[in-house]
Each structure stands twice: as C-alpha cells, then as structure tokens.
Image (cartoon, rainbow, N blue to C red; front, side, top):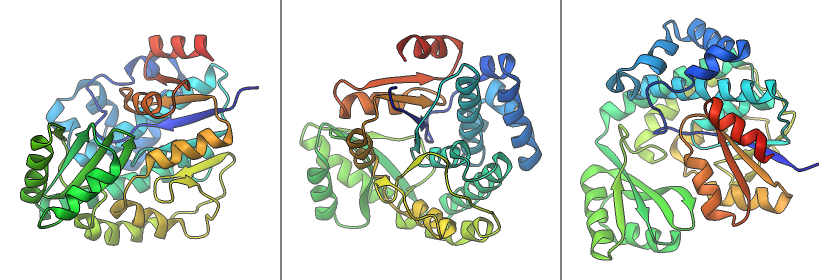
Length: 306
C-alpha cells in the first residue's frame, strides 16, 4: 500500500470563504470549528467564511482560522477513508499536524495557536520587520547576499530549490531585495505583519512558552516531521521548548521533503487553504504525487489520484 503523508498549510494561504463546503458537508469538520470557538471565545467560522479580508489577515485571526480549515480538511479526508502514515506542517501548520498525529487534543491545539498568534501579533507591533520571497536562486546564494547586506536579514523559510524567504528589519530587507533585483531575480514582499521565524520574534517565543508548558503532549501515532530539525522528529521530551524555538528558527521545509522522499512517501496530501505546499512538493520532488484538499472539488480530485 502506498505511503501517504498529510501536509498542513502555513500563514498567508488564507482567503475568505475557505473550508465553507467542508463545514457544511462533514459533521466532524463543523466540530473542529465548534472546538475552536470554545477556546478562542469568538466565532472563527464567521471570519473564515465572511471576512472581511482585513480581519482575516490579522495574525491573531489568520493563524487559528487556517488551523481550523486545515483540521476541517483533515476530518473530511478521514471521513472519505484516506489513511496516512505521517504528518508535517509549514510554520503554523505544524500545530494542525500535532493534532492530527494524536500528540495533542484539538482543544489544546487551539489553546496553543491562540497564545502563539497573540504573542506574534504583539511582537509584530513592537518590531519593524518584513519578509520577502526570493525566487530563482539556490539557498546558498540567498544566504550569501543576506550575509553581505549590512543589518539584520536572514533566510527563514527554505521552501524549494528555487525559493527561499528572507526576513529581518524592514529597511535591511528592502536593501537585500534591491540586490536580488539587480541580479534579475524576483524578490516578492509577503503580506505578513513582521519578520516571522527570526530573532525579531524572540519576545513572542518567551511569552508563548508559558502557555505551552501548561499543555500535555503525548507521542504521535504516526511519523512527525519538524520544521526546526528538518527531518523526522524522534525526541518529544520537551515540546514547549521546541515550539518556542520554532517561532525564531528557520522552516527547513526542503530538508523535510528530502527526508520524506527517502522514507518512501509516495502521496503528499496538503490539507488547508490554497495549495502552496502542493506546489513546493512538485518543484522539489519530481514525479511525486502531490494533491491538495480544501473543498469538495479538490477532495474528489484527490480521491481519484490516490
């Protein structure tokens, strides 16, 4: 039987109306939103389905919203009989992956993401930071330009062989982006509140760990891949410290994909809004079967390809 891995979407993939079809069709998907509401203290489904964009795009809302949609897609996939042998997430997607793997409860997942989003929103308001996606250069070249740029800018998302995201102080990021433009490479500013996965988020990590230390973490029931280590995670003894480190550490997604490929995964199934990770898999692992599930049509297409 083919090995399947579930991948969970990250921040920036949100859009108004996401997961509405799954919410309406699958009782277990609706239950995800009910659990989210009970922890968040407000109606996240309303923001997901009706917006407006400005409200949905706030870090404090977009993180739990994307997680709710990703877990709704997870429940829909399970309801249709799709099995899985491993999980991974991109940035905040790792929290949905923890829930899906059985490491934490749905309620604790939303408790963690609520604290993470609030801490990151606060840190974003306190720090002048930006992020740019650099297209068409390998990671080593991107690292070199960052090192040569005066001030604080670092690679933070290793997304594919030809896409690395940089983050840091806004003016410094702009200077680095100008250098990439001179090299005739694309430097696209991301629609995010600050420099996530960089040291500018240290205050968020320090605040977040207090909540993480109140949560009970078990061992996952399937293979779990980590952004921080860039491979399969084996040590679950201090998850609060690892998750705090995750906030200020690069997302080593290309390394994770290489590790998954080596393990023999054949089907890469992205759960959540948009299909960013599906595109990254296709760019990185030639010939891999990568599909996404975010609504009824994509679910039907995924079922047909598995």
